[in-house]
Every structure is written in structure tokens, then in C-alpha cells.
Length: 218
Image (cartoon, rainbow, N blue to C red; front, top):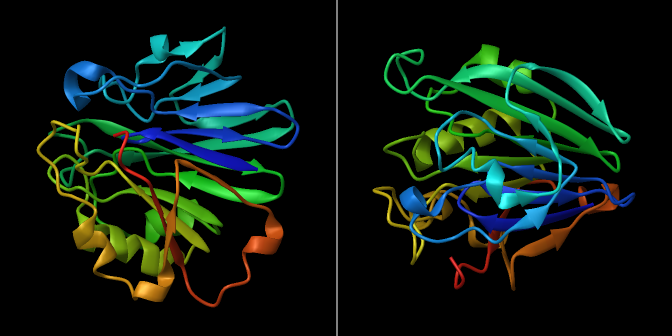
């Protein structure tokens, strides 16, 4: 299966069968740069803020998922669970949905704009994960140290940081550096471009690998 970073918290996930999922499409007005339009079978929105629910950027007639539930779409299993956008059970910024996907035998989790600390309830609810996509920029979400706690508890094979400050991003959030500083250099895999492919054979490392995409276009 293939993961393409489209910027901010938006990824295009493609199974070998051709089934595609776009997570948290974003609007230029908040992020500061335009998301490239793309097609998909499914769009997931972790919450209804415009940097995560710009469905208009996804062409075609995708199935839009934004609530808690379980679905099977063209052979892909999808589930979501309730969490919160802040540390006060949503009183500041509302609810957040955590989505899980199973594609080509790979378990992926997109944390959306999680803003609450890691708890046993949340971590156990997420369960086993091969690839964890998690915000690290702080302010509106968990910060680097809080994200590391999730990584340490869930122990994914691969973690992909998201929702952090890039060259074109105009939001008041931190850069990726603080998160990367919490890992050994040999754990960091820097990818040329914005796409990476995985299958079950890739998940044989004894420690979590942090994937960092090329940020020049973002």
C-alpha cells in the first residue's frame, strides 16, 4: 500500500487494489497554502474545522466519514473512535475522531487533531498499529513530548508526524524538529518526495521508525 502526504494532516492512502482514502483535506485560508485536488473513494474528517474538512478539494463522489463507526469499503476495513481536540474533554475545541484503516494487511491509524494526553483508554482503544500518523505541532493539538508518549505506549512500527510548521504553513504551531529530537538519528527515515510504499515485510525493525517527507513544496 502507498501513502502520499498532501500537506498538513492530509494523506492519500492507496491499496494495491486501487481503493483510495484521503484523510483530513484542508482549506488554504487557515493553513496558508493550497491542497492539490485529488480523487478518492473515501474521505475521512476527524472534525469540522476547515483545515481538516475541505471535502471540496477531493474530486468525484467519495464516501465521507466523520462520525464514530465501522465500515467496509471495497475491501478496506475502516473504524473510528471518539477522542477530544483539547485537554478539557472538548470544552475548548470540541470532539476529534481517530480513524483506523486496514489496507493490504497493514494497520494504519490517523490521530486527527488529538489534543488530549495519552491514556490507557485511548491507547488500548487504538490497539495494535503498523503506521501511526500523529500531530506534533502543539498549540491546537498535542505537542512533541505528548506525541512521543503515544508512540511509546502504542509502539507502532512506523510513525509519520503531521500538523507541524512548514515553510508555507501560516499556523502558530511548532516545527517538526522538537519531535525528531526525541528519537535516535538511526530511527529517522528521510524520504525524497512525499510518497512511501509499505507491505507487511517492512515491519521487522526492533524500534519505531519515524518517516519524514520532503517539506519543500509545503
